Length: 402
Ligand code: C5P
Image 1 (tube, protein in one colour):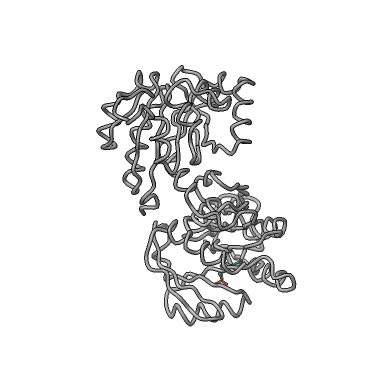
Image 2 (tube, rainbow, N blue to C red):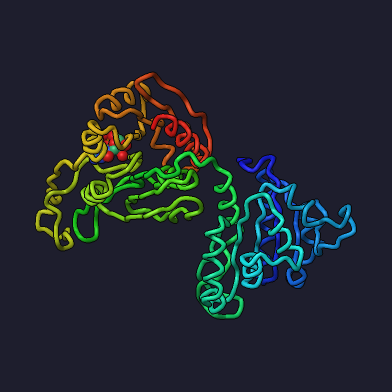
């Protein structure tokens, strides 16, 4: 996707066993277009060699502030001035304490103190060190000084213990950096999203669902978080991870049936934008059995299912939004044929400002898609791309309308 094209990232490593993940992180950042300059504390060199990081980044690695390769011995000024972002990973408890206090007694802490660019730290430490009040105070201080914090997460630790303090995986840190550089188009805005399929029970073990994977809705949630929005993601049954809260926030509400989805949406209606991405079942089984239906009837007759119409969530929200013009409603439609005419008809029927259509169901479950945007002013196309790229383009498009 090359979201980091032209960005200079100063990857500052302090000591910790999680340093091994930083090799992969450097690779991901470079692959996405960034230039990566590595600086390492003395402790970091105990875990990874400067030669490894130099080979991966193609740039000389600096390990102390007196490096003679920098004119005037001004490594701290020279290196930090070139950067668009300083990323401290792993950030040990000791290094975070130094940065929060403004100490400058080694290359990493001096780079952070002398910086003019933003700073993100990626904590990595034992759970007791993380939970220690001193570390928590330092974290709060860093946050209130505008320093970004990525992670940590909870899990097995190198010391054999299990708990909070484990550094995020390389891919997650990379996604956090990409999110950081996305334009903050929705700061202060609330975004409500439905995603995935719904499931209508026939009996306790059987039900009716559809092929929606939830990927498009979750991509929109991620793009909205990256844009600084406060996101509520109402998800039908799907196995996707909730996007991490890098720059915005997310509240995920899991539901099963269309009625549950509708109830959750009505509770969370105080939003600026509503993305109805879920493939909601139009019908539910009115006479769902409370016990498993047996096929051993004497005449082998099939069970008689009576269907009743589910609430049309989008149409309801659209109706409620007419007076206040809030939320801005975005509908989705997967069509097998006559995409444009069906999409135009659906937009008018639902009375919404924007309908996003695609040719399905072949796109269900795929990582990419191509979209047709239908609005009152006309139609426009978003050519085939990764769903996250399309989601970012959609956010950009809509941010100009609210
Ligand atoms: O009416 P149809 O299902 O074709 O419209 C699709 C759009 O309406 C999607 O945005 C979908 O999320 C939404 N929808 C809804 N509630 C329903 C059915 C569809 O919100 N019961």
